[in-house]
Image 1 (cartoon, rainbow, N blue to C red):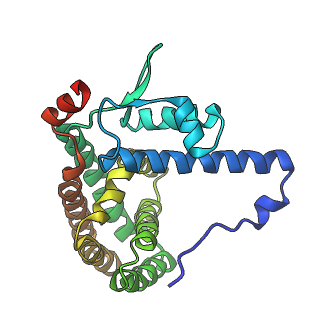
Image 2 (cartoon, rainbow, N blue to C red):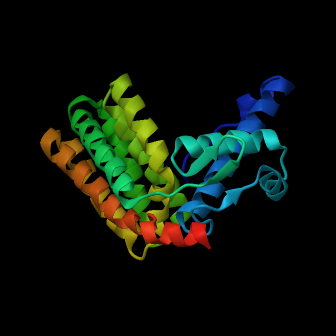
Length: 244
């Protein structure tokens, strides 16, 4: 199974100035992903200073994309930006993370329920095909490719709800949780469990069972929350890191 990749042909046809903006944006996205993963997995500890110059040197960029990356990380709650004092790694408390996942679970339940009611036959078929193909990624333990599939799977649910407002709420909430949702796949057996949880959602949507689809989606995110909780920072750990 080859997962869909962006078609860059149109980008290449655009003016030089536009191509530079695309590359800059991609670099910021890559930095946000890399830094957030290091924070979530504990490589960067709460209270650790995030120096713009050091980050610029590390990723071989100017300070401008570094500032934008830190701004996005602050919006995600992973970085604290202090006036005239720079940025530090934020403390992500278990209660805060649980609250975000609780909201995400309800949003996903709404999306799955509406998808069961509103998805077109073509959308249902595409969802089922992609889901079945992802079983190969699990069998081959292709974590990175499954992660891409997982993101696409949930986006299909958000779009399948056919509600612009709900789509916006779901995607913005997911962006804040993205590093934790990625980190879950580092846990033993999580790929297999994720696919099986998706299977219940897909089956319900194909059958047009809105209640079952919503329940399956809510339970799925609740299980993701439990799996991701290990990456939250306990208060004692944060104090230890900041103090010493």
